[in-house]
Image 1 (cartoon, rainbow, N blue to C red):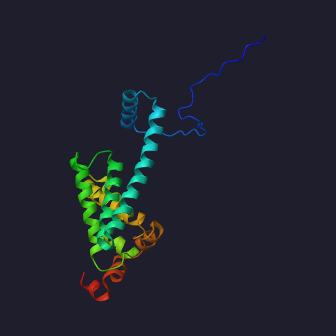
Image 2: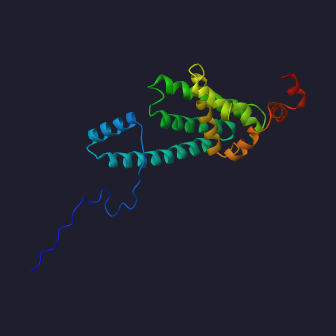
Image 3: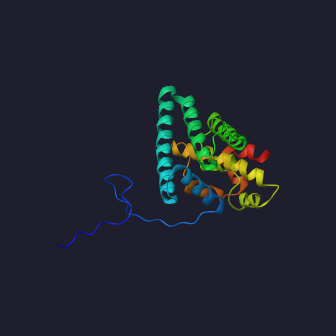
Length: 206
């Protein structure tokens, strides 16, 4: 009587759920080292560690959205919008840096700048048009890239990136223009942008 062949391979990691997709991507050496260390400490393979961290990031994003919605509902008006945006900003920046704002000085700096940008966007009695976004959160494109590549300008690049977290938070809340609308405004001259934001008379003074 022929014996049944035993099934080879690892058992499924999630009961009743099969892994159906294989993803291949490249990572920087320091990130690969961090993944291997974290996987070893948790008793997982590197693939399992990547899957675990991706899953956690989606869960945290959902939790951040719930907190933001709760703050808006509880406080209402501009105060609710401000608190909601701050909660989203903290989540976005901590996700980017991989550190808590109250445990890392650079992350705390980014959060402070982003919170200031949110307040500035909400307190001035002007609608957040694409032109105002360009004026408030610039520079953009090649101008910003030059700062990134410069040793002297790197701090300014990091400062702008922190403020962009504020913009992303406002976009998630439906309070800021889309990336496509902003891209259209970046093609305008500085004078056209100033006139759209401050009016012709004020633009002439600048």
